[in-house]
Each structure stands twice: as C-alpha cells, then as structure tokens.
Amino acid sequence: MAVDTGSPGSAPPTPPPDQPGGLRLGGVRVTWRSALGVVAALAALAVVVRFGGGSQRFETRVFRDPDVRFDFEFMFAYVPDFLRALWVTFQATIGGFALAVVIGLVLALLRRSRLRVLRWPTAFFIEFVRSTPLLVQLFFLFYGLPRITAIPEPLRVWSSLATLIIALGVHYGCYCSEAYRAGIGSVPKGQWEAATAMNLGPVATWSQVVLPQAIPNVLPALGNFLIAAYKDAPLGFAINVTGVMFFASTTASRTFAPLELFTLIGLGFLAVSLPSAFLLRRLERRIGYERT
Image 1 (cartoon, one colour):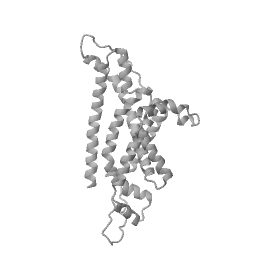
Image 2: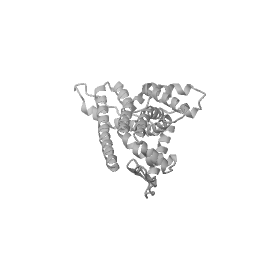
Image 3: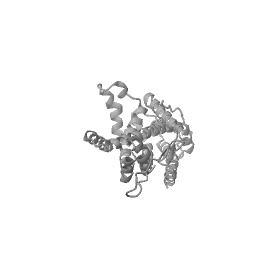
Image 4: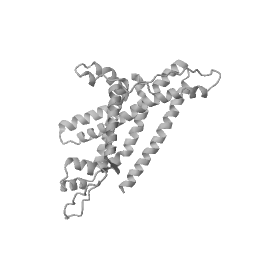
C-alpha cells in the first residue's frame, strides 16, 4: 500500500481504513487462510529439516542394448526412478528457497541497521557466503560442523537432505538479501516521511507501506534465484542426497550407460525449469498490473 504524500503544505494524510479480507502485500491479498498455509508450509519444512524427508532407493535393473547407439527403451525404463529422485531434488529446492526468502529479508534488515555492531558482521557474512562455493559450504555443514562439540548436537548434526536445505537457504538467502536491500532502497523517501507523519509504527510502516512496494521490484530477481537453486540442488549428491545427480551417477556406474541417464535428467530439468520460468513471468506481470 503506497502512502499518498499529498501536496506541499497540506495536512498529513489520514490512514486508510482497514480493508476486509486481509492485508494486501505486493499486489497480493493475504488472508488468514493464506497465513495458515504459510504456517503449515513452515511446519512441513521443519519436519523435513529435522527428519530428512526420507531417501529414495533405485531398484530398476535394466541394461542397455550394446548394439544400438542410443537406447531409448533403456532410458524410458528408468523414468520412474528418475521421478523419485526428482521429488527429493524438488523438496530440497522448495525447502531451501523458503528459508532463503526469510533469511534474506532478515539479513537485509540487519544490514540497514544503524548499529555498526549489527551492520558490519552482517555485511561480512553476506560477502563471505557469496564468495565461497556452495559445494564447500555443503562439505563444511555435513562433515565439519558435527566435529565442533561446543555446539549442541541438534544444531550441528543433520541428515543429508536437511543439510542441503539449510545450505541452499543460507547461500541463496545472502543473494536474496541484496535483492531485498535494493528493493527497499527503491521506495521513495516521501513514503517513509508520510508514514512518520501518519504516526505509523515500525511494523505498520514495513508491512503496509515499504514491503508492498519493495517486493514487486525484487520479484524478478527472486524468481531467478529460485531457478538457480533448483539447478544447484543436485550438488547434494556429494553428501549422499538421493536426488537426480545421485540417481544418474550411481545408475551409470552400474549399467555403464551414462549418455542415456544424463540425457534423461537434462530433459527432466528442462521440463521443470521452463514452465517454472513461464509461471514466474506471469506472476511478475500480474503483480505489476495490480499495482497500476
């Protein structure tokens, strides 16, 4: 909700009455039902992080025909195993990005703090995470962190899938924080002054004035980070997450047919990435239309 700053010399505008049906955030109306949905999604994420969300076993035993150059029948026989692996990758992507969206907003707010004791360590952490490879961060969280006995065990020992979700959340949360910071900085200064003139509290200022104008500006960047997280999630095979890369590498080592298997996961990535990118563009246009 943008605040009408009014003409120079006019009285401060009065706050608009609360509209029925929930809060409007970034062109999207948030109702109590959607809030419950968010809570349920976070609860499901907590279960996956705590218990790992299960692992997949690939039991198909089909071998390629050595007399053909590319065995389509062999490739299609492994589609059910591939779909099970894709489900694990999907869990990691959605869970990690849900964390990244929240972590990014927290980091963006901390980096805007007037206190140097908060702003400087936050800036260092963001730059450190963005400057190190995700694979190194995965190895540290899965192999290095459990050796630090000073940290309580529930905070340092996680399952493979939970480690991947947390690593994706922290890694892309740092990228999202910069997008949030740019979006918040794009809100006109007059909007902040008008919120102060209306005697709005910090919560009302951020939830009803600043974020509804900042989020649509960062939505394209967040969509790109979601697709990038989906493409990075297969790195979890390095810590035994049974995703698509784990499926392809283990099955190829058993069947000696890497071409068909890696072609299958390439086609699977395209089948998910292209519709996702299309839906994100539609969402951007919808929110942009509702803001006008």
